[in-house]
Image (cartoon, rainbow, N blue to C red; front, top):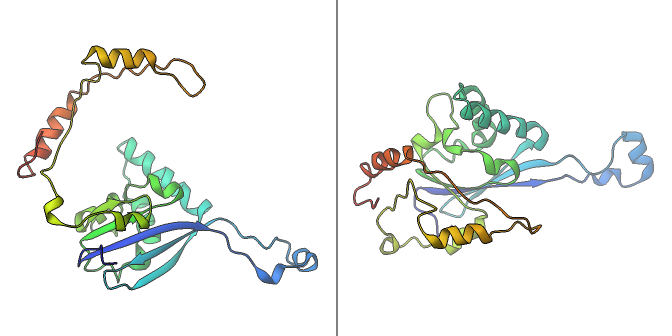
Length: 212
């Protein structure tokens, strides 16, 4: 908690299965018509700077994951993603809406298919999460303790765009020598992306001191 900013929070997701102790005998299992181990579910834990921890059961994985797929597909095809983004917001962020009221930096540690969710686009019907808070990601909440919050450790923003992957003979040699895990050759040639140059220039104009 001490690594969190004053208006920051860590939201960590995990998967779990419930075990019903009342179904510990074959007779009980037969009577209930199901086993003691429940379906895979998502749970979330919210850590605040003062050490408070809040938790919530999000729902069954089989119920949540289809909306993750739908959201990504809507974004990919430039379709209206707002309805599914709102449903996911209500599931994933909604249980903590009261605690997140004053948070301007949300650190998220997703699990399972939630690792594919662009949380910034989730919205409550009025504004998106990314418009209200800075969102950063960690593979695990434990990694929070390995980051430094000292301002002196921060450097100027570095923006990289439109790289020429095949600009040297060394790169060409590396491509030729590349192999898959099975030993087969891999073609590692990538085409240039000139459109990213314009995007990077636009971003750089918004960040004082940015290095492009």
